[in-house]
Amino acid sequence: MAELATLWIIRHGESTANVAATHAEASGEELIGLSHRDADVPLSPTGEEQARATGRWLTGLPPDRRPDVAVVSPYLRAVSTAELALHDTGVPVSRDERLRDRELGILDGLTGHGVRRRYPDEAERRARLGKFYYRPPGGESWTDVALRLRTLLGDLRRDHEGRRVLLFGHDALVFLLRYLVEGLTESDLMALTREHVIANCSITDWSADDQDRLRLGGFNEVGHLHRQGAQPTREDEIHAEPV
Image 1: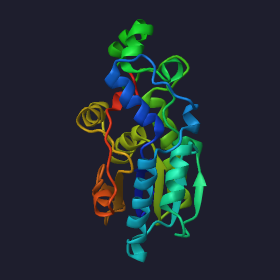
Image 2: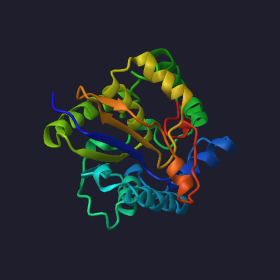
Image 3: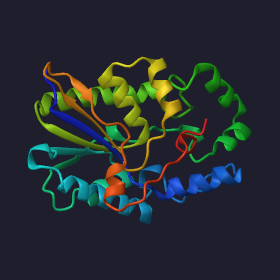
């Protein structure tokens, strides 16, 4: 099967929703209090600086290691991250809706406390079904997102065989790309989600080995932010997925 030379995924920089969610969870509120629909949430000033720092890292790569092409989630926080990071690099960019964040349906905008208070039956159903298969009404399960990412990977392998591809997306996508690229099980994936929180502007990458199979290089790396003078941020995944 055709394979990419290198695949990266960078999570978007810190967004205003990340900041609002952190405050709402810490305050025990039911609503995050968003003023934008999910697709239109902008970066915070910290997120903008994280994206610029990521751009400085990219321009510091040797020419034979830089991305050939970038594919970006259409959500504003990912688009803005890509624009700031790829400014003046000449890397061609396209948007793909399959890289959008997981849709939460009726749970969108609620904290974990808010879900338990307003939709206790859904919280119970999610606990019974498990994180991987639970689909909130009007939203997506992790398996739904995996299906759209699986088709995207197939297209990337077909259209960019032997090339270096950079993705800009969201935290759940980082986990699910590991699931798909590395052939993980549900148990493997859920263990990762319990042990790790995907940091804003973190980098995860895979490179083809001598048998033309993608192998994990770095996972959830933020060392480039420290080296470029930007402050990493970490947030509890409950902010992005409230139950």
